[in-house]
Structure formats: C-alpha cells, structure tokens
Amino acid sequence: MVLSMTGFGRAEGVFEGKKLTIDIKSLNSKTFDLNIKVPIRYKEKEFDIRKLLNDKLLRGKVDCYINCENLEDSNDVNINKEIVKSYMTQLGEISPGANAIDYLQMAVRMPEAISNKTADLSDEEWNFLLKIVNEAISKFLEFRTTEGSILQDELCKNVKNIEAKLSQVPQYEEERITAVKERYQNTLKEFENVDETRFYQEMAYYTEKLDISEEKVRLAQHLKYYLDVMENEDFNGKKLGFISQEMGREINTLGSKANHAAIQKLVVEMKDDLEKIKEQTLNVL
Image (cartoon, rainbow, N blue to C red):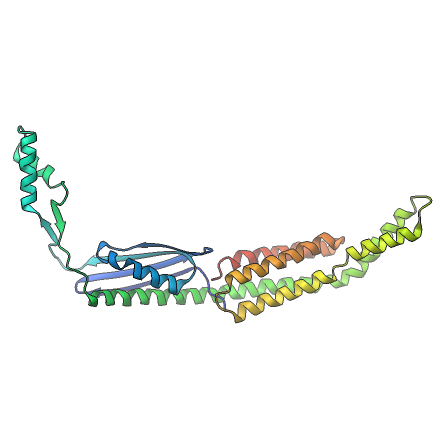
C-alpha cells in the first residue's frame, strides 16, 4: 500500500511539574533529512531520539521539536557569589572611578557568574520522554497512512486514465498506415524514372518503423506493474518513480511515431496524466 511522505504528529505529557510537547512533521525528500530541536536538559539523549526517528520514519524532510515547559514556580537560577565578587574586585582595579552598581552590572554578565541548577536526567524522566516521542511517532504514522490512502486513489485514477486512452489508439491505426502509404504513393507520381521496387521496399521499411505495437504492449505492462507495486509492496515510492519514467519513454515514442492527429491528441492527454502521476509519486514513501 501507499504511505505519504507528508505527515504530522503531536503528543504531550506532564512529568514532575514539566510539560513535554513533541511535534513531528515532514515533507517529501529523496533521503531522510532530520532537523531536530532538543532542550538542553535532553541534549545527551539527542542521538537516541535521532536513531528512533530514522528507524521509524525512513524518508522525508523531517522537523522534530521537543519543548519542555515548567508548570511549577521554581528558582533554578544560582548566582555564583564568589565569582561575581572576584569580577567586581578586578574591575575596580582596572577602572577605579566607577561605583559598585556599575561593577555589579558588568560582573553578572561575565562567564559563570550565573548558572542554572538542573538535576541530572533520571531514567524515569528519560523513559517518560521516550514514551511521548513514540506517541508522537504513532500519530505521525497514522497521518501518513490516511494521506497515503487518498494519494493511492488519485494515482489509480490517473493510471486508469492512461489505460483508457491507450485502448483508444488501435481504432486509428489502420487509417494512419493507409494515410502514410497514400502520401508516399502521391510523392512517387511527382518523379520520373523511379525504381518502383526500391521505392516500395523503402516504403515498407518506413511503414515498419512507424509500427507502434511494441510501445503499446510495453506501456500496458508498465501500467499494470505500477498498480501491482503500489498495492502489494511497502515503501514503494522510489520503485514507482522508476516505473513512471519507463511509462514516459513509451508514451514519448508513441507520440513520435504517431503521424496521426487523433493519436497525437491521446498522447498529449496521456502525458498530462503522467505528469500528475510523477508529481504525486514524489510524495510516496
């Protein structure tokens, strides 16, 4: 079945006064391209989160935002008094004319003057974060499945459109070959002393070159194969892209050999449907 590369998932939870919110969203991409924003508190676990997302999401340009919000009033700021005093003393030696407030304002901006008091990340908090990340991934994958179902319906419709137009080609083939032969015969009448045997040999050769039987058969096979892969293989986006390229080659050859207005019109309509297929296939996982 088809899964969309586009997706969105959000999960939230509260652990010991901290509200955790995970947002995951993605667009199509040839590879897995992850942009992740993790609070400093969870930086040590960023690699594990990246690996989890890579294993579950596979492809796409993915943005993952992890937000941690304190719900309880707490004083996590620590002023390193001895360091601040040392800064003020040294500033006073450098610029003895300023007052203490000026020294203090400069000192608190210095490195290590103020720090955050953060407890080490416990196993319980990490497991809770992991649970929320997995919930966001599950919702994200549900979104991909729903979007993929809609995408599959559209792809099927466009493939069926090409099949319907291909089935209309045979009704014009006899008329097309007859018109080509008449054009060659009329050309023959304009010249004198023409070797008719050689002429008809050449005409047979070019008529054979205009034969589109193989293109019709191959295109029909590609259309059937596309539907089979879409319905029976997982993570089939790249394979469907290759098949759509082969479909394009056969349609282009059909157009170049057509030499008939009605067939050319059908080819143009097939190309229109194929462009929709190619565009939609880019979003298949």
